[in-house]
Image 1 (tube, rainbow, N blue to C red):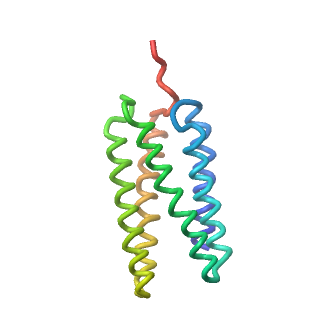
Image 2: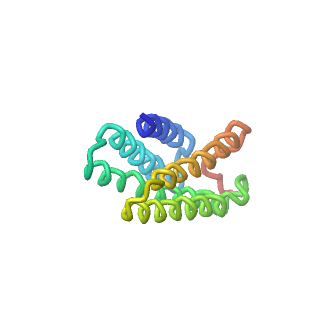
Length: 147
């Protein structure tokens, strides 16, 4: 159920991002990667048998870092989001680190592998929560108009 809820919330986030981006760098690919992550998470929740679950997890956890690379590119040079390119890249590196540790723990059949998997999700959720609070506070992602 956790994966399905994560997938549904990521899908809703992707739709909201598509509406917020309205053109500019990554306007199509950023929401598309989030939708792929959402689909993967929902399928992970539905397909719990191995090895299918593991194969689907690759879709989920590979598309997620690509979306963050694109988001960092979107924030780069945007004076309305100072420091967000660096914060987004740092978040991405942390998620990738947790993914590597998760994969090593999983391969070695360690019982705590799932903890690292959840840390990927929690790291992303913290970023998303802060990002959404900034949007609620009035910051926008619409392309800057060049004069």
